[in-house]
Length: 555
Image (cartoon, rainbow, N blue to C red):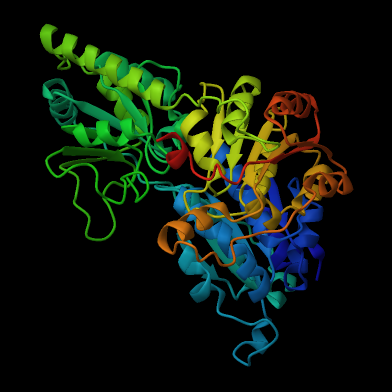
């Protein structure tokens, strides 16, 4: 048997042919045959400190680029750690391939070491999952899964491979060409005309734009569409980069921490055009919006909603960019008439002014801050210092609400957030983004609770040569749960207090540079210095625990 003929090499050959160039892993003996093949492949393989970190790196990479990376883990224990990233990739509609080692075929069904049915247990978190028991099938199945991951609504896929299969002879097989995607159905001009007619006739139409706009590379088309048909735009939750936030037609991001103006304007819409969004629970304010009397048009590669939710009044199965460009090219497209147009323009201007007023974070009164940082000061400082080409990642937590409210994104910037609400996401996702596009600065926003979950990946970032600045908002508590706890069970605080951590010392021990900040006046200089450094940096902000919620403190 030659090394070139193993199942592991067949698998890796299919990855290379499928365009995969990055892999993230905690190595395990159950897939040593794959690791050995990766050594000779044009795929950069990065060892991480935790499988959750590996999965989040692959997810951040895929969310930024639209191309799948690979994360690899061993049997049950590694796969369990990896699962949080698979769930996040599904929620974010991110292409990703997880390769999971499995017990040898002869040991299956005997409660062997770390045995679990990977497909039944973890595959349900994915778009597709398969276990391959024949080495000769590995190339074809790997190619097929990569195609599934990218097609339609993208998502994670899982390939489970027994240890003996990756080391067995696979023959001289090569991956079959993945079946081509079905050709896109032509868009019906009359359907587009009816949609545009509805927009023209509506008194308060609204576009809600989601990740499908980003995946389709449709930002410019969205801007042109909004301007041509005079319709304002809101971003779905954690997708504020779908449109330049400085545009006068942009009215904010829906969901958690959005100002009251966003929900009020969303509720007032008489026609909502949902572009590349599933209007999930957060985006729709607990499925309360669009309002019952609002006409709903959805354009998405996979339109419709799960469960017992109301169906769109009009559903167009299409790539968002195709739809927008077809609408812009439609001859004689309906437009608001003169008086209606003037009312529409005045309404948008008033809504925009209200949004700007509600999202301007003001400094707290002098003498009220003590020696701790106000989150609003951190947002203002980052807004002033953030490079025009930066990528920002976020963790879950109350600190994120301040940025959701007050940080605005320009056309050259990107934002990566877990719509799954996963903690621990920001740092590894930032590493994945930096690996994908090493010339761009990446900023990871996190609270002390979430950051500590995977802060060992600081060493991974240094070893990878990443250009990442982590900003840790440290109030020594699980702030979101603490706030909900105090509201639901007043005076009965349990398990939400955390002890002090010297995050700067941890960063420096990992080879990064760090700044500790305890006063508002020192935030901006620290951020400017950290962002100017081409390596891995960390800014440890000791934040005021009394400033838990942007909604409570700025209402």
